[in-house]
Length: 223
Length: 244
Image (cartoon, rainbow over all chains, first blue to last red; front, side, top):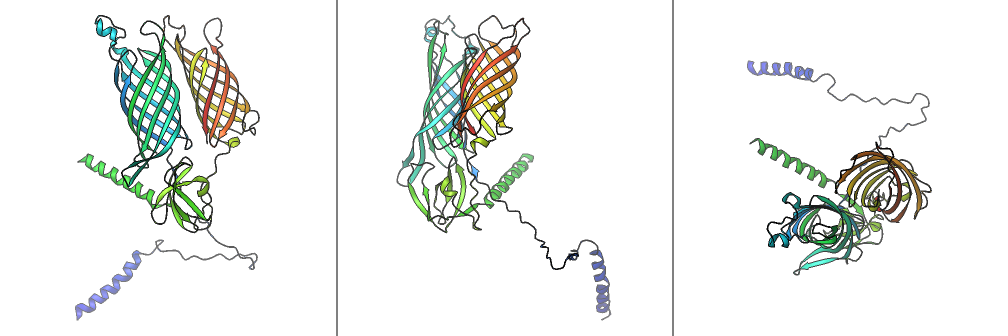
């Protein structure tokens, strides 16, 4: 009995103590609305403006990716090529595209027949290029795989210019290309391209336009 | 172990941002009699579904002038920008589809083109910031490829458009400065490989469609050299650009 009473007392003692700990600024302050002093008939609305944020629609117009394939360097054989590409789609028809690619020239026929002759030294066989192209989606459409699958696709043509560095010399080049873009998902695309890099060179003795045709396969993602 | 921890953190962060991105889908109500959904982002793709008036659709993302939307019953397709712009929020406010930037008042330009500089083939890329309606600051990076040498030219300048309201073609004049770097292809080496230069230009610009424009420029340069006479090459170029 005595214990029970003392525990009640103790509880009674402790409870205000607890409330003492909670005193101060922690509790919400009583809000006293200030009444307008001048004219009581005018009601001043105290409305806080609600900030409405409309969710932004993500624009996925930029395409970024890499490709791999074979580049036929005129007089220097066919060699593997790899590179990166970036595209910006302006409208459903038109896009800007830029490539940055790299390959290496092989042996010329002359070097094969006469092993002592060197047309281009080894370090100069590096073939690098960049392109700035304008593309047009000529044949947009869908590709069907079986009964229940359809992929959006487009056959496009690109034309542009750029620079090719081969035999340690930068040359102005014109590019013509045809490619196919197949959208596997909304953000992932498969590309198959054929591109020609035309530039003037006098590496083999006389000045001529050389055609360097590449066939590539690549993937891009839309951002 | 530390890597695992970092990777876990990164993955978590990724999921946080993903869930954040998914948390706020844009929902719009069709206000016109119907809204057509096509199977692809283009005018030629077939209409395969129609969302009726009063129905709510979710806007997922956009590609050029097309918006990927999800119908109330889960069908996903592409809606034309003009049609989606006529939809409303549930509150009745118009859909947040901004109109195309006004050509006369656009702020940014990004373009590339072909030209001839000092009788060399020229590849040019530029960006342009509108200071006022008729005055622009332009930043140009170009590579000229010739038989004797290659040159890189970087310039910064101001350009004035005479009648910005003339949409299809409007004359421009410009003034600026920059640097030229020469790398030789055939010996002998050039006497100076890096020079400052100044230029004046006259040209024209015009609207093509939507966000697309053309630009034509003729420039007369003065290259400041340490020799007795400065060099004064000329340049013309034509470019295509997008504006924002």
